[in-house]
Image (cartoon, rainbow, N blue to C red; front, side, top):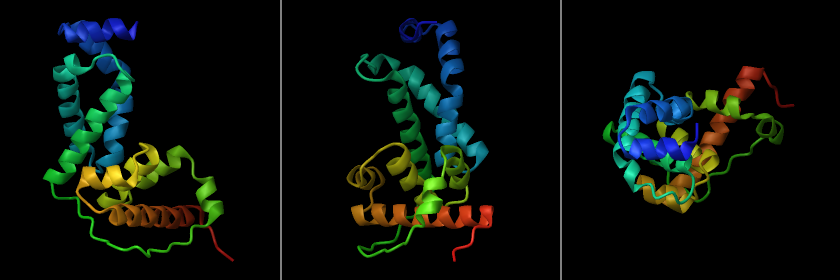
Length: 178
């Protein structure tokens, strides 16, 4: 079915269009929630709230840019709001000199699915900054503004997230450095 027709139907609050939109994007958008929210139950709650906002704010989508990107932004914002409300979000490292030597063999071997699986084992701050920077393509300045942290904290959280993911992957693969 034509996406423009579905969007138009959603703007007119037609249930067939809402069902179709939900069916088309539920897996992608729920997967996005899960990247940010560790608990399955909490991710489901955030997902439902995000879809509610998508349906209620669909008239604000003017057809400029990607519709999927517009929906993803709502899901990300809902996820970040949840993390802030639940106070699971503590970022405290302030350092210009966090040095982590990343093993290029490990970093190069990471596949998208490996990364997503490893995210569940990261603390909330690491996971959130990693998602925003690596997967969503935000800049450290944008992350800092969005999360109310310093740019240096964003950078250090990313470095530490990568290090932790590397350690987890080494354990998983029983990888030994010589």
